[in-house]
Image (tube, rainbow, N blue to C red):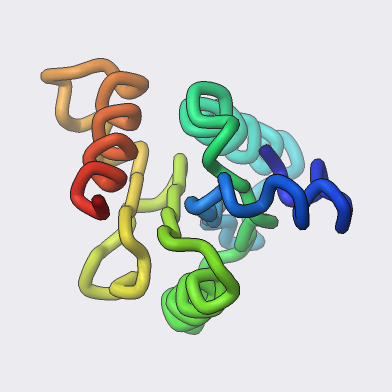
Length: 141
């Protein structure tokens, strides 16, 4: 579910079921043309759906960090720390457009980077994503 799908009452009632926060990172540079921007954001949306749809009773998607830059890794790390301190057990960062480094994004419990997943042709992207999310939850038990 998206963060905007909750109101105060529904969050108070059901919020304890949602232990995983997804933080999308679009990785826009600001140099893209409008059509290029649309294409990148559509790819991000499609990648995000691989988590949102099968895990909709446990995952909350927060607003995306849209632009990449010198401070984007620090910002993402800070967001991961904050969402975990506010009650989420897991912070997952994903990007359909950018390679993500665990050395840079060290506060995330899981990084999902479509360019890296697509380079590994052994499994379908959806199967890989599902396995990574389930593996994260199994390790946390």
